[in-house]
Image (cartoon, rainbow, N blue to C red; front, side, top):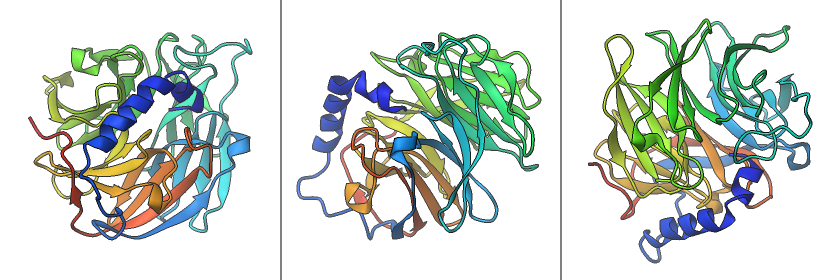
Length: 333
């Protein structure tokens, strides 16, 4: 989410944050020291330059690719926490253009493929720019799939085995699919569970164990949509609920267990395979409105964009351990 996305719905998100917090047990201990250890801030970003990081993908050397939503940039954060800008997507010719619910163009999802190519989503608010873009070293960014200008393409996931991208549109309540090579997107799912309920619906997306997992920010739900033969969408299943403000997710490698960024409430939660939810990071650990999570082995990366706090957008790192504190939120259905 961009800063403006939150400002446009301050009352709604504030209420969501209150709902989230009041479901946690009174007097709960700080999150640090549970399932995540060695928690530290690995990089600080420049708020004044629009470096509010929206999404992340990891490189084998431990560095990370990130997208800065407001500055329309793709960057690499190296192992020393230094930021290297790789590309800037073009601004619309109309300086006043913007997609629904936003007051400015925004880069959102990011995926890196094995050959080093980076793919990013761009919600520009114009038909000539909105869509899926390919970024290669030494080349100008290239749009390879156009998406509706009246939508907000947000979450980006890749089925590496099937060779298809999945794109969660937060305004149109649609998951699009497009081949890795690009082309014309197809509406893969328009299930009602993807729709917004006042602001933004389908948000984060990840492929895992034969299914596409999608979050719904407004409804606070985590959905599992089976990927059927012929790249057809199955019926969505609600795997967790009560997570208002849920943004992006990452699987830990332990079955269906995952970590989820809960933006306005300023938390990262663990959702176990049976749907139990526990808080593993919060503001005391340095979170500044987290937007996305990535996991490689036991290493955990969390981006914070400081949409509400307007202080210290950053990249937090930690290590997976065990344990955690349970809350009353959600539950598998």
